[in-house]
Length: 343
Image (cartoon, rainbow, N blue to C red; front, top):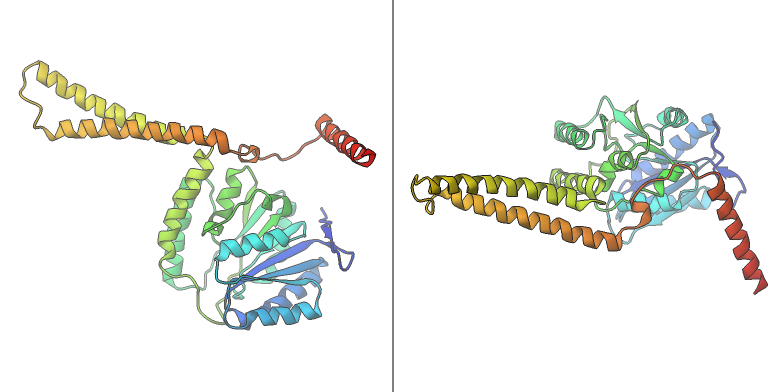
């Protein structure tokens, strides 16, 4: 299988692989990473481009990329006005990528470019997205333990068995990126988001090198952010098109439980088993019925709002269009051009 890629406007050559590399105060490693990727892709015979995204660096790293771009037309720089986060940096880079296969890599040199060929082989095997799996991690326990907990929670929530959802070293078919919306901290959930859209997601073991420069930019607060984002992704991927199923389902369960409690107390009152007005169980039953009713109401309101705002592309993901519908599209385009020229 060959990847033709889009034609480079400057060189006239096809771009087979794009490398999107966000960086934040990583000036020591940028030139080294550029050389390593370049050497590896030369061995593989792949035409490539580099898209470096400066996520608000203050160490002068953007000048290093400017110097590289002045010498090599394959290098591009996107510089943010301030630090917007890794998800925003990846999203900006993906928009500019022109290769049929798009790689994302961290700029800290812990991702080894010698794995590029293995990623391409996995894509050729039919995967739409391939994520790296750092089997042996050169990180302290305050990073490895939370990562294991995070991966276990995501696997349970989405039914996608991966060992390392958050590995920065990934490869994508270019068409996948048009259906990938990232903001906040959602870069941690890219495999889950794509799996929810029906894409084939795979993983390969990758070498994880020890950090050579600087320190990690992620602290303990990422655990809180990760937990909140997990709830966001779980809700939007499973119930974005049917919110009543979530809120209404929970509301029915709570209302039913509250109804049973009230029915039990009513029977006690009818048979003369004593007053029920001072029982805590009465308050619990009433609260469950009221809260369940509110949840159902929220679900109904969400359904009304959804019907007015949902886009067609949010309902499904199309893998292929062929046959008569494609011919009709072509004929419609030709007719439109004829009308335009006639005017």
